[in-house]
Each structure stands twice: as structure tokens, then as C-alpha cells.
Length: 265
Image (cartoon, rainbow, N blue to C red; front, side, top):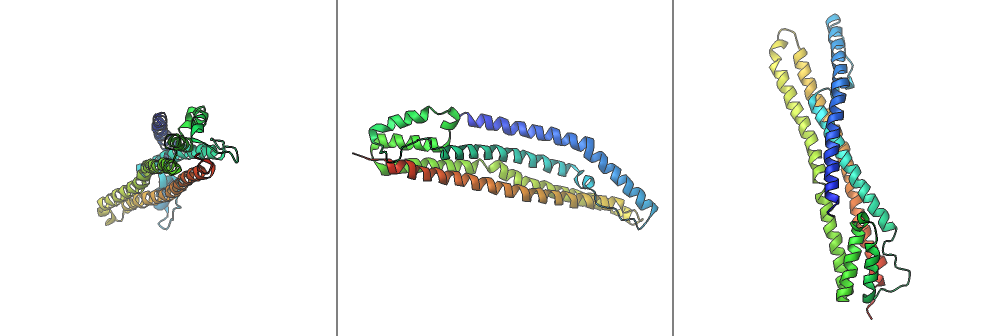
């Protein structure tokens, strides 16, 4: 497990920095200039025609820093989800590949456990860190030491239970991002309403552009944040479902491919 955490940390940090650089560059070079151009066209249209109705523009909806921050966090969360989903898929493929490879009808005696443990130790280091290999090694080692099948079952399932708790705890960052996105949207709402109230005195003279701009910031930031949060929560639950299936499949593998082949003389 030692090599996984630095790799995952560096990947997470690198994906965050890449998201900040790329998204900020896009917003600076493309989104905000186009939003300003659209707003200028809309303002000119309103001056010429009091009944002018402007169309909603995606550039205007996305131009503020709250929306930019939400997109950065969304991309960061997606990168973490992709990484964890890839790890889950590789472990699932390892379970399907039957790492212990006990021939059908073969019985494992306590004296045979060392041979099967050595077989698992020949796997690549990344595969040795997987759940099914660690649980199988723990179960075989316990059987060789105690010759008790119930102890073997307890040892294997204890590894699976600990892995389930670890996987759930590692989702805390994604859960935090899923909370932070709508929170940032709410900050935009408060900021927009505050700007609109600050310009309310101009509305008395007939100039409502400041009020409408502030309200636009409030509603647009909330809209973007809620939409991104909905998508992120769906992906988070799909990842959590895949991880829970992985743990259940590992426990099923231990029961069907290992424990039922154990035999005490």
C-alpha cells in the first residue's frame, strides 16, 4: 500500500494544477472576452430599442470567477474519479483472472499454503497491493498457522472489511468537492445580490443595468453550481457502487475459490 498513496497524491495535485492553468487560460482568452462582446451588443441593442430582448449567452452565464472555480473543482473531481475507477477496474480484472488458481477439485492442506503464498508473491508489485491478493495471502497464512477454517474466513473477511472502510474514507475529498461547488455558487448568489442592491439607487433614475447585471451574476452562478453538483454526485455514487461491488466480489472469491478448497487432515 506504500506506493499507492504518493502516486495518487501526485496525480491529484498534478490534475488540480493542470485544471487551474487550463481553465483559467480558457476563461481569460476566450470566455470573458466573448462575454464582454455579447454584453456590449446587448447594451447597444437596449439603447436603440427599449423593447429589445436579449438572448441568453453561454459566455455570459459562465464568465464570473465563481463559475470558473466550479469548473476547476469539477475537472479535479473527475480526474480523481477516473483514477479511482481505473484502480477498481484493474482489481476487478484480477479477481476475474483467479490469482490463486486452485485447480477444480484440488484440496489445500495446511502444508500447501506456503506454495500458494509464494505463487501470489510472484505477481507484480501493483497486483500484490490489490484487495483479493492481500486477503488471499492473509487467509492462507492464517490457515497454515491455525489449521482452522473459521479463523481463515475471519482473517480474509477482516481484510475485506478494512478495505471497504479505506475506500469509503478516500472518497472524502470528492464528497468535499461535491459540497464546495454549490457553496461557491451560493457565494456568487450573495455577491450578485449585494452588487444589485448597491446599484439600486440608479434604478430610481431609470438605469437598471447595474441591478440586472448583479442579479445575473447571482442566478448564473447558482445555475452552474447546481448543474455541476448534480452530475458530480451521480458519478460519485457510480464510483462508490463499483467499489462496493469490488469488495463483495473479493469476499465471494474467497468463499468460492479458496475457503471451500481448504481441508484439514
